[in-house]
Image 1 (cartoon, rainbow, N blue to C red):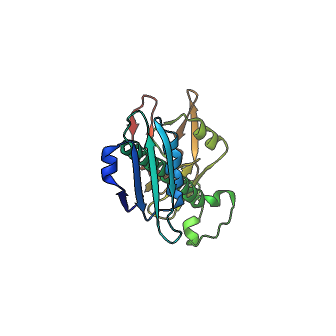
Image 2 (image 1 turned 135 degrees about the horizontal axis):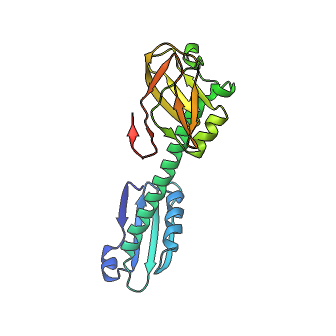
Image 3 (image 1 turned 60 degrees about the vertical axis):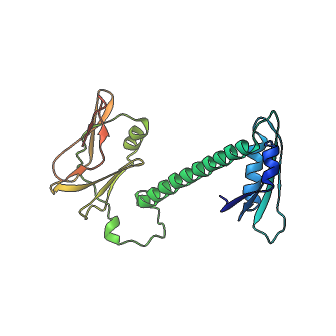
Amino acid sequence: MAEKLEILNPDGLNADPTNLTVVLHEEDHTIGNSLKHIICQMPDVEFCGYNVPHPLEDKIVMRVQTNNDVSAIKVFTEALGQLQSVFASIRDKFTSAHEDYQQEIWFSGMDGTNLDIKVEEDEWEETTVVVELVGVLDTTSTRMAIQSGNCAVRRANTETPLIQIGNSIYAGNWSAVVGSDLIFEQKNNQLQFSTASQTRLTAVKALVTVDETVKN
């Protein structure tokens, strides 16, 4: 947001709190249009407009006129808060989308997709193992992931292997080296992890059980 806000004619504002003219320094049409859009939709706003005094100046001049004795400064401040919330929402959505994209890249080798990512070959060596995770999986997405075979273990030759089930990633460490298969059982219409023979992975990420308690 603007590095500096300057109220033009403070004496006039004191005499008529419904008429505010403010300068936003180091801003342009992006903020001007956004604020104008928000303010014009607010109740008790009679007029809102802005202009850029000169194309070479990085500032905008905005005027807000209210009615019913509503403070123009209050309206302007509320609009700034709403705009900040919009920015925060956009940032959160972008961050979430970026994390999903990074996760997709991380496990892209499952379907044979060859993305141009420089990593050590042994880091992406795929191995099937027996996994022991305490808890019950009863979400639709997890069921579909398991039923479609969307499960894999990555970095199996490292001290901190990763297992993916659908879009969930579990990180852990090897407790014993004895195995080869990843097995699940269906109990009471719910999918539950089962162990069979050999290699075992203790998961760091916990799963919620039927009684909604969490076990690691």
